[in-house]
Image 1 (tube, rainbow, N blue to C red):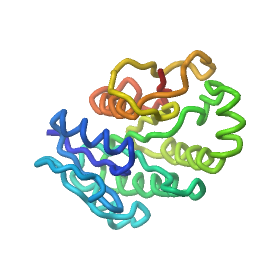
Image 2: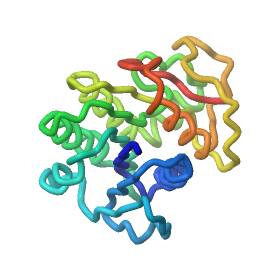
Image 3: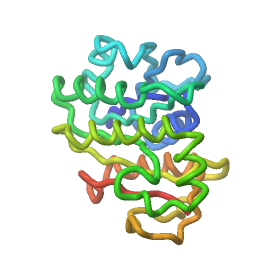
Length: 210
């Protein structure tokens, strides 16, 4: 039974991941500042209450895991560097413990996927309103790419509510203009879970959208 550690487990994507991983028979460790917010009880689920900025609690959490998923959010603040700095701590702890498989959720538009975005996302959202969030994702991706881990960076479009359909586009070219720039949280989790048993996107940065 594969052991999976999820950072950002109480977020909207994290919750979906925990549910789908348990459903698929994984042993799940949910790492969060307030794990009680998850409100899920399961024999194969354990909680670690901790702060991703505290390297000791991160190092303890990664011990004995088979894979680690990072879906950290920026919390209520749209400024700050919790994503990139937290990811840096996770990478450091994984390298020290010798754990290789790391899946990190970033955003469509980061790196060489900028041309996938439309005017609204380029200039109003990431160019203005979410400028700091976007910059933090760029830093986060830099840390992951510099690591010695078996990483995959997933770049979803905007999160929407909706069912897990399993029917979405992924790995489209960086200049593709035809995607809807949105995807349900359940489908983001679905795609992340599939990467745990598939190396097609090892050291790659697939975009993800309808």
